[in-house]
Image (cartoon, rainbow, N blue to C red; front, top):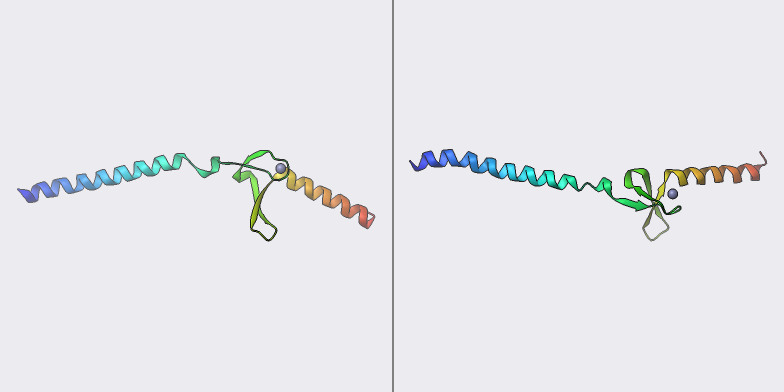
Length: 88
Ligand SMILES: [Zn+2]
């Protein structure tokens, strides 16, 4: 008799534990890190981490974030100064 109870209840208990664990996992996925907003170090606008480039600046391990628009502006600025200096 005790063996029958054991055989019936063990899968139920295991299933319940697995079910609770999967539910906890699902609720953790709701607070995804992709929704976090960071400031661009140059224009100070807020962007999600997927839109920013993280770069370690200087020797102190300080990490700054740069948005695509600022990187493009810097690149264009750099191209312009190089062109002026080389006389093109
Ligand atoms: Zn920016």
